[in-house]
Amino acid sequence: MCRVESPAPVTYKCRHTKLIPQQPRVYMCDAADRRGFPCKTPEQTSKGSCHNRLFDCPNCMEKKKRDAKKDGKGPSSGVIGPISSKTGTSITIEA
Ligand SMILES: [Zn+2]
Ligand SMILES: [Zn+2]
Image (cartoon, rainbow, N blue to C red; front, side, top):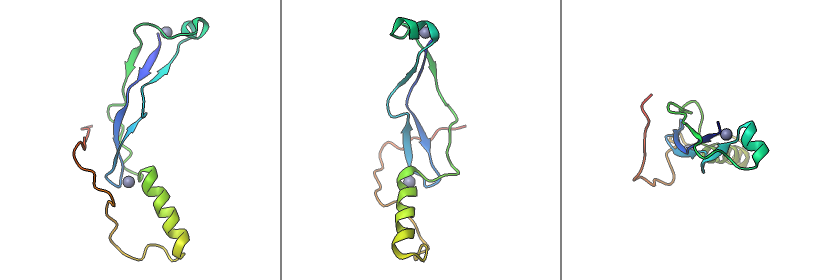
């Protein structure tokens, strides 16, 4: 049976939330692979308790890398807050 992974919000250490995967991802089983298209009723998989709390989101990681390169002295200001606060649909999954 094929499996489809639905987008699920992942909360990062920087408190940003990102949908992973961005679009439903289908994993085709052997039969479907031979056939060339997935089964009619793929099994839903969800990473219910997928928290990436140990890491910053890719955006923040990129930003930190860039900042570090820029002045070469590390972060100068102690407070790092979310730059763009697009609040509205911030979903937090309970483990
Ligand atoms: Zn299948
Ligand atoms: Zn972030």
